[in-house]
Figure (cartoon, rainbow, N blue to C red):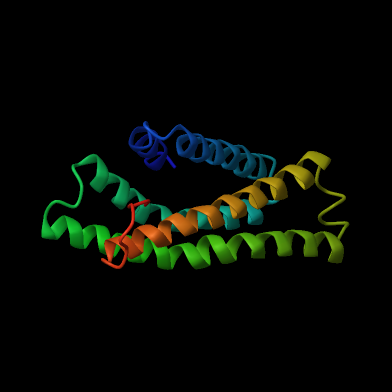
Length: 164
């Protein structure tokens, strides 16, 4: 988060909508995860949410290539393509599977053990945490389309505009 927020803030300077999504989702995540860890409730769910960041280094590689002039050499092109493949592969388990699993587990815990979950958490935590994860799932699903298009383009299969 400490590398990708400034990097994406810079690389998305000409795309205010994408920039707002990127900064906004990090701000909400930071508050939700921070609250879960500080109050020592829902720590498991905070850590599970942080697992989604395992796809981030590959995105940072792609953004860094943009900052440093693009895939202008065979080595940069290979690095961009390999980072795109690894981003795509990491995105599935750590975002597209992780977030639905997070939501299912969070609500299953409330149903199966209310004394240890629902009754121990504040109404804010019970509403805010899953709302943030649901937003992250929606955004991640939208972004996955762009990631897939960008990967197809990087692999030479796309004839259209490069989007990721």
